[in-house]
Image 1 (cartoon, rainbow, N blue to C red):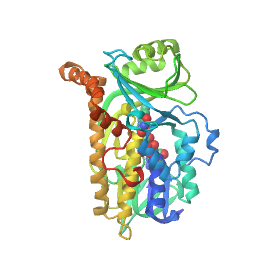
Image 2: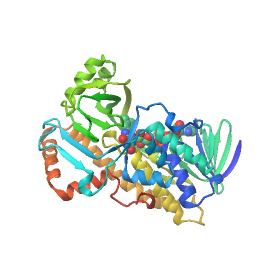
Image 3: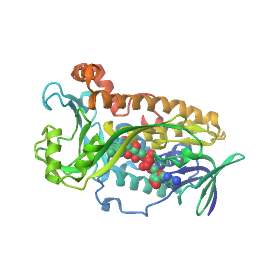
Amino acid sequence: MNQDVEVAVVGAGPIGLAAALLLAKRVGIPPDRIAVLDRRIPAPVAIDSLPVDLRVFALSRASEKILRAADAWADVAAVRASPYERMQVWHADVPPHGGDALVFDAAEIGERDLGMIAENNVLQAALLAAARGAGLGLVEGELEALDRERGAMLLRTAGGRIRARLVIGADGSQSRVRELAGLFARRTDYGQLAIVAMVSTARPHQHTAWQRFLGDGTLAFLPLAGGLSSIVWSLPTARAEKLLTAAPSEFERQLEQDFDAALGAVRLESERLRFPLWRMSAENYVTERIALVGDAAHVVHPLAGQGANLGLLDAAALADVLGEAAGEDLGAERILRRYERWRRSENELMSAAIDAFDQLLARGSGRVAELAQRGMPWVGRSGLVKRAFIERAMGLAGELPAAAR
Ligand SMILES: Cc1cc2nc3c(=O)[nH]c(=O)nc-3n(C[C@H](O)[C@H](O)[C@H](O)COP(=O)(O)OP(=O)(O)OC[C@H]3O[C@@H](n4cnc5c(N)ncnc54)[C@H](O)[C@@H]3O)c2cc1C
């Protein structure tokens, strides 16, 4: 199949779909002039009949607003979404309920919650339904080649070609668009695996996102609808590998120990998923007629639950920049550079902060790490600094795109 469009988005993950929807709804590009290409486009489903997905996202308030602008939020919120009203963060050297635990409460800044936990497949299905409703072109196929033509790019798949004036690479951390465009990315391996699973706890989760810095990694308990919790347990690869195959009783014993039994006894309620962790940052997000968004441009450690949130801000920022350039050639590099300058600095800032958390609080030792650990209660006592932390976690700090305001 051959197509000629204004914009081709490669990747129908959450960020690619959100970008395509915002281009149609906020920039005014006709939906039939936008093509979203993915190696697999799931068939339409009844969203409330989706099976439970172990992969969940902590979605910030900014992401909620962006998903509203994309007409996908109502579906996300309707299926097992669970608000978290507080975050409790503490270090292995202090007791979970002692005065040194850092508690961020939505009520402190007059908000109803800090964000929402939503399942990956629900988010994906909600965005796909919105894309179908808006009449976007959804094309199944694997991007194989990307050729430059006069005033356009030619995308080739096994089944056909798409000619587009602008290509948005939303094809995830191993982005083929990034590779074919020759955009260099720096990658650092954390030497860690994240274990993701669903657990029940003896005491209720209190709609709190719990996070403990362990000394050799990080453990998060995210509150799910129905009372269960989703864990993200980031550990050195060797220890994580052992835990992935340990008997459930041994897994539960070590989990409870690492969590300092903050919610009492823990029971494993699902299989265990594994995710190798690395940090990646593309040196350039754009070149003539190509822009990268989401994990194609940057991958951060999951300890702060920010990857998809940052990607949604990329999508909304790109829509703002293209909206301001209405009537011009949207693939022009000088226009795309505005998006790069905006989002690369914001993402680098967040990525460096997350890295510092990992190095100093989660795995740090020595004098500097000790000082950082001692600084946590100080953050808790300083109203201004604490507010800045809450606003950053909710995605409400920095230069916000219109859809996130
Ligand atoms: C353990 C863990 C926990 C996390 N928790 C959170 C959290 O709480 N909050 C949060 O905000 N983020 C979280 N993240 C980060 C989040 O998962 C990612 O940032 C997000 O999924 C990236 O979405 P994306 O759309 O950019 O990429 P992807 O979801 O990877 O989508 C890429 C799409 O591109 C398609 N594709 C790839 N190559 C091609 C090709 N050649 N041709 C055609 N199609 C192609 C793929 O099929 C896929 O559909 C977590 C990550 C991990 C590992």
